[in-house]
Image: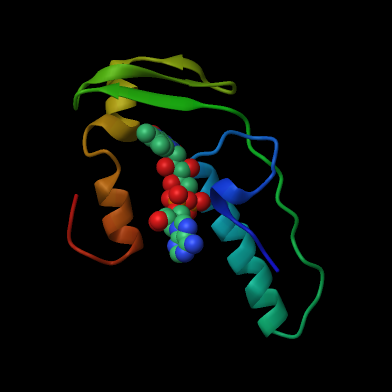
Length: 96
Ligand SMILES: Cc1cc2nc3c(=O)[nH]c(=O)nc-3n(C[C@H](O)[C@H](O)[C@H](O)COP(=O)(O)OP(=O)(O)OC[C@H]3O[C@@H](n4cnc5c(N)ncnc54)[C@H](O)[C@@H]3O)c2cc1C
């Protein structure tokens, strides 16, 4: 049995970003099992981070490996379209 998302007891923030990483890990393992088994991948919690847009072009972000990011980078990461384009691509729908 696999678990993903907020119901996990992993030592990391409960975020949609983390849930997506869990999903990648679990789909890899399900494919491994479908293909006859082998060593399953284990999930390592990622570092904490936050993207806090203020409107489409403002805000700030933080990631330990990058430090504090300003408004322009925050808009690129999230604020400009609130990631609707990324999810439209992921689900092969129109949007963004
Ligand atoms: C206000 C707010 C802002 C957030 N902002 C961000 C953000 O900017 N970035 C980010 O990465 N994360 C953010 N999060 C966190 C993010 O929303 C969650 O981490 C993510 O939604 C978890 O996904 P999940 O699928 O595990 O759970 P959920 O999205 O909670 O999905 C669980 C689903 O199960 C359904 N359900 C519950 N019980 C039953 C039942 N008995 N039978 C059938 N269905 C059931 C629920 O209705 C729900 O649809 C935010 C959360 C909140 C509350």
